[in-house]
Image 1 (cartoon, rainbow, N blue to C red):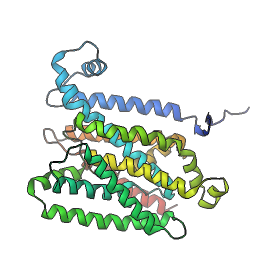
Image 2 (image 1 turned 180 degrees about the vertical axis):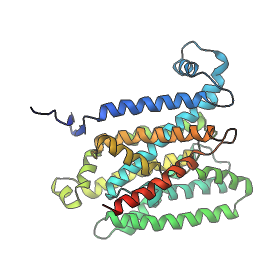
Image 3 (image 1 turned 135 degrees about the vertical axis):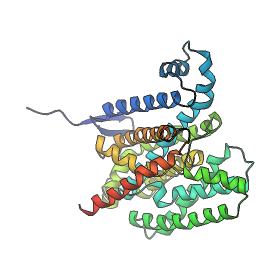
Image 4 (image 1 turned 180 degrees about the horizontal axis):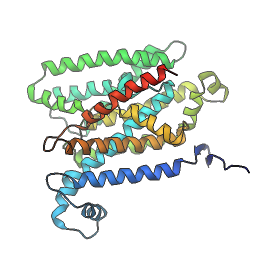
Length: 347
């Protein structure tokens, strides 16, 4: 008896890729978890709202008008920002792990997040009156500058994945020291705002923060998915990828640009929420396998669920005290990172 093929082939003119047959079911399940997490997050707080009323209000169905302001103005944009930030960080981490062929790579580890944070903190401390719209642009420029610096410093007749990581770790230390220097000498109110932002939080996020973030994900998430096949070829090794017709350096540059855009915009909106870009790709890989055509959307939804649930846990665990979601992800992510190190050591 011949078993069914474990792959689904998708062809779209110039683009074609294969996905594991588990991918559609996993994506549907993760989408349901993300939506349920969003609804439950919006419903919880000092002024509880029945989940059914949340769903009715979001969908524009007849609902109790007393809940409209709490849902639409105070809680829904925050919950949506958590989902989008998680998607951006997780996708950036997935791309980096594929580019470097290193399961421990993530935007916060190799310096992209720290570059974005440095410029964003500079804007918060030195230009406190700047409109929110410009913060993602500033963070993108900081992340792009860090990525270019990493790429140039790691270049030696080609860009070695190992050198990219080592240079990134050094750059993270350097930019982190500059960020600490600005915080030390900055004005106290601006510094307090920057410190809260650096812990990673979606507290107080409104539609004003959501709309500048959305275009970055709308452009660069699909672009990352279209480059999934090339990322699979890079995973086979640089020489083999060239033999299969891949323009290695051009592809690597494009994927680094996607990483910078997704990580930089997420960091600008919610601060440095750590370990999402590390954990989500690993969890997704266990669900759907290593092919990036299925791995990227699965990791994106996994990251969305992680940040949404971390925000919910931060609000409820020690209520009325609220913990930033970055603290929750760090509490989970740091032991997970150590476990990955231990596991890889014994392979």
